[in-house]
Length: 265
Image 1 (cartoon, rainbow, N blue to C red):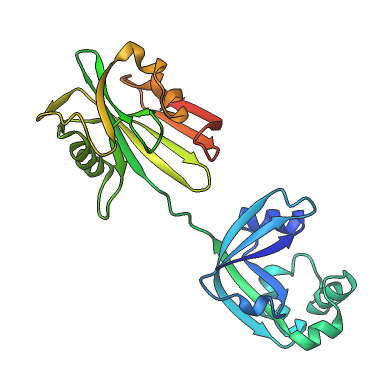
Image 2 (cartoon, rainbow, N blue to C red):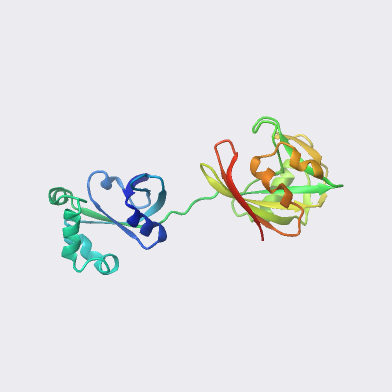
């Protein structure tokens, strides 16, 4: 379960940089809903224009602020306050919490760690034959857009395992010595990495029509002109080159590129 908290810039930046490992809060009804394993999304005040997500690693509750601040005073407060009493005083005089609500609810320490994102990783391969590249033309799902054969990882697969399996499933062809050409990180409402391969050797008989669409051999010179995914279009010129490339793409809900950068490796 995800919870929302707000922090002013200094504390927010300390949290994001890793300098801040614990969050101290009034243990009111809202905080009692938080459990170990939940996530907390911190929003930066005053504009709430930046956010950072953490996992809740541990929760400790106390009857009063003195006992609460005493637990990690040496680590969290000694460089800013001359005593535990001074931290308690600042809690009240700084307007964070009143004495009355503190006595009523007690307080809580959330030990936090940076949230680990689960990536939706996949592979794709551009197969070249007689200066033509094999491309899938989707019939329904993406609206007549072209893309190279490929797909998502299954459990236990390496990128090479994945691209060999996916390519065979979608084309009937077995790739021989596919070469990693680049990696492309993307982010929209989720995020992931595409491991992009190129190849020029294969075995088997092509299955031209699949559930996804039809497979077509496109002239290499025409590849930049066909209707591809916006992200793929932008790294097309880096294919079948000696250098590997790395791309980073911010996408909208329609897979259009809002911002990107590509570099050779």
